[in-house]
Length: 238
Image (cartoon, rainbow, N blue to C red; front, top):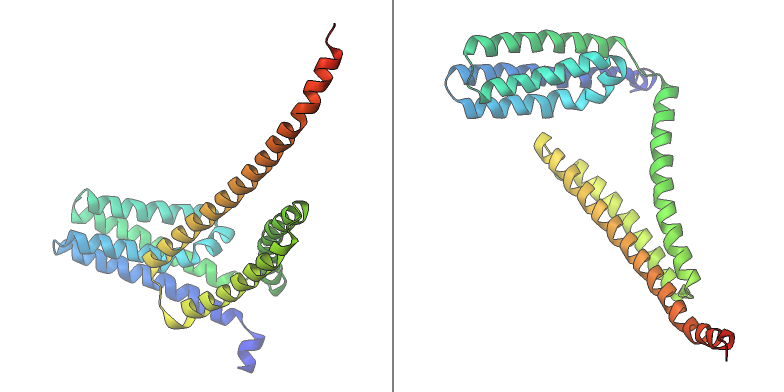
């Protein structure tokens, strides 16, 4: 444990290498299934090679060698396209060999290039600051609206909801890390549904705020009509 604390890069190197090994193994299984005539299983294994293998280190590789990342990604897309088009086994084998060499190159680059502790800390800090700032801006906008409309009684519900969201975030993290195991496709679906839900909530809140602002302006306009009519009559020639 003391050695790992002094050399944490060993853990990350092993993880990156193992994920790329998963990608190569699934590509080999996919090729074998294709040769046996099971095209559906071959395609599923090809997708697994990307989701469970390459995608997990895709961001790290993009920082080191952007061109290699694009080459591997497009190569895996072509591999799946060859399966869908029912190309010859020789073409698929040639594409698999090319991807295997590219993945080996990526593994070497990832194992030889390490992220410094300062860079890792700065990256994590920037993510926390950015996400935290976004949340604070939304809460501040809602709080300002409640104060402006003399509905300070609603602040307690706002702060209670903020605290509940924080607790639910901790529960979600614990469940996803210790209770359920989310695979590649499940991870993509979870991220997609979470993004859609967040976008829907932001749209709803924004539309609600806009509608309330419009209603307040319309109310002020209606209340100002008698004064406007009086001014118009006073300025009308007799």
